[in-house]
Length: 240
Image 1 (cartoon, rainbow, N blue to C red):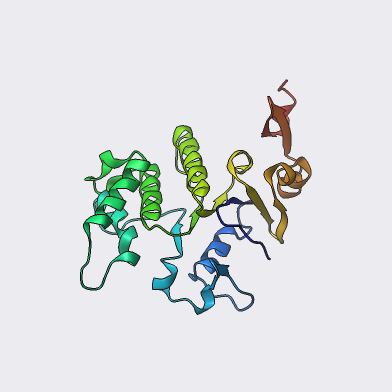
Image 2: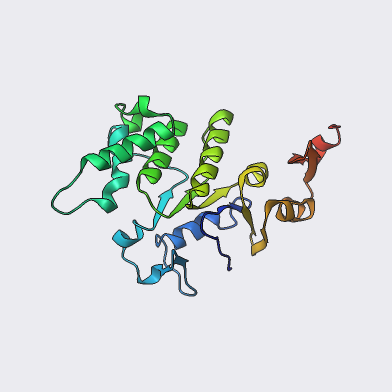
């Protein structure tokens, strides 16, 4: 497969379970080895990149994270500053401020003193996103960033990703929700079990033909006051 994401774009990687989205992420992050092709991020071929150098280029928010130790939330977010720490001077005041700013940006600073491993799955996900923001990279990968969140926080995270991308940060976010990628993304890459089947702006990619190729004739795309929405075909017949 081959695709590119422009600087400052919010790109949605969309497709069904088992099509390889997470595997692709892991290859891009060098968690898995690949025998052919190349991955270039911010002009750097990661095949020649050390992990400590990659950490200054790209931040990663996994789909699920089970914490082994009871670090405080503020400590977990501060870990995002690790690539910027000097060998002799350690944690600086500016690093603590960057971590605190990230907590406040996600409106979770009230969790700062709580043990990370005692939070709900949704709260832990917010903390990991704050850690990625504190890392201050040019690229952020997010694997199902809103899967554990309630509707309010889902919309809040997508709004936040849009604001971050508008500051010139490139974001690649994996999602199962066609509405999320349609409403918020600049570009969508649609995967199926045979690889990429379509890519481009949401209004050209999130269509009934493509979705029915992915989900076997289950979806309908409707427009309400100019907002496109994907519905189950059984529901769309009842919607006026």
